[in-house]
Image (tube, rainbow, N blue to C red; front, side, top):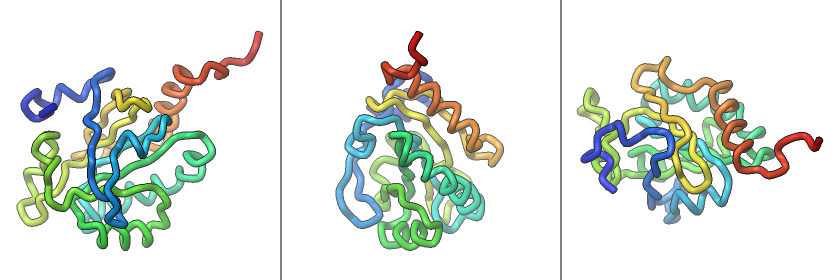
Length: 174
């Protein structure tokens, strides 16, 4: 599906997010559906390691990784940084979640998420998506302006809502 042809309105709740196939921070080919592994996930598109806003936001996200690991949920970051740069950035952050590299920018145009004001790095526009395990969108956040990005509480709230719909034993027994 070419999201750009559909316009950004394609990122609405219930719409399917494309099953990206990109190398991870180690260079290993991965699919987004494989990384979800049947669990809800947060997908972030990132300008890259060079951006102070990205550094700040991802440092915050690292604070959630312990919760994500015990809550059967996943975090994935996509940027145009090459795998080696992503690996270094990831290590510097102390992140254990997966970074996907679109250094060749194969998915940038089809997703319609090209950052148009940075002509030096040609990066992704910052955005965040909370996704069901089948990659349906729960919520889309436009992070172009920093305050448009989800807070840790926004992410917790979205993951709680997604989990409540997926887990048959979510409610306290009567």
